[in-house]
Length: 219
Length: 310
Image (cartoon, rainbow over all chains, first blue to last red; front, side):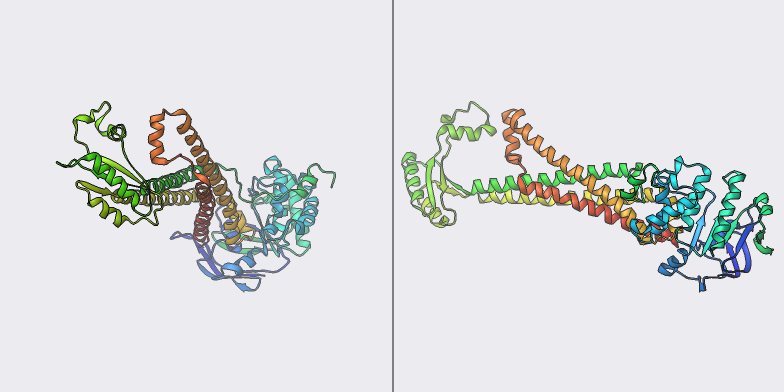
């Protein structure tokens, strides 16, 4: 599903943040991406999201070489990826329902085409009764569940999560991880970036460990 | 599920715009568009008023010519006046000819020489106003020839005055169009800066939209929709404000101002009435400003998106 071949990344003329990464992530797998602060986790996620281009090497996603991809092809790949941010990044002026429906709306689907699916998903993540609430009225946990629902509403093949449990309590962290595990069971490839050791210890999930811009796998 | 409060409302409600309309930048831009549209409409309205007045003046002046009879030694003025009137009225196209009384001449000279003028001590020429009944049938050459047979008589067709009026009206129209152009250019620049500001402050929204798979075209459409709303709303406020201004100004000129000031303004702007064509011209500015705002913002947004995507 994802192949990195000698991928390096530098910002401007600065030192390389990621060095010669070569690895593959199989479809339907579940990985933790971990490493100390500043190890390059967020940079790696940016490459996977195609919001940054590698300085060196080649990234293949869903069978397509992403080098030089632009326009509709880039868009088509992005729509196969769901993303969950630590800081949720919900749009403040939209309701929970509208935030979750956003990925389908940007694909040009009418409200009637996705209303049932969004309602069902919000029920599944426990926000069925908070559909009309604006983000400012949601708790941290509710916001994160809304963000996860938004990330998976368009049934992405790859789900990326950047420190998704960073702003929620330990109990909710665990519940969110179970949610990711459920999604993975349904066939979604999941990559969760985290540095929370308690979480890493609790879930027996293969780890991608980034240290000084280099990656190693720890099963 | 359906027992949840507000769900029924959600099902019938239109989805909220992805780009929030009521942001600070939006309000500022709307005020700016309102002011710019008001100024544009004021310019167009003033040009329409002056153009109408110029056409009116030209038509009034064109309906009359003047025969001037200077004092000539050995000639009897009263006899020459009667001859001039008779000759003028015999020319095809002329309706009526009449000599101006001393009081009328005094009234004409008063603005230059002041009130209480004693004309008896001055050797002023006699003036005969020749009213033209049928301008298309008037044989001005024949009239000129007839007048030239009278010693000391000359014909003034007001051609120079009419030409000056036309030049003045043309200059005002061209100047008005230039001012309108400058205002529209200023509007475009203001929209560009406002759009850039809005894009910078909406960077989070743009990033999220990109991450969830929105195309640049979709994002530009969303922002354009917002700016079109702002442009049309601001344009409507500005246009209606300008129409209200002309209505109130017309009312003030005709009722509040002293009659002398009113007459002077009336000479320049006519009855200060825009008329249907003037109102249509002003209302035409509204969609122009709305479209200009939307188009400018779209181009700015596309450039912004290209920059952050590259």
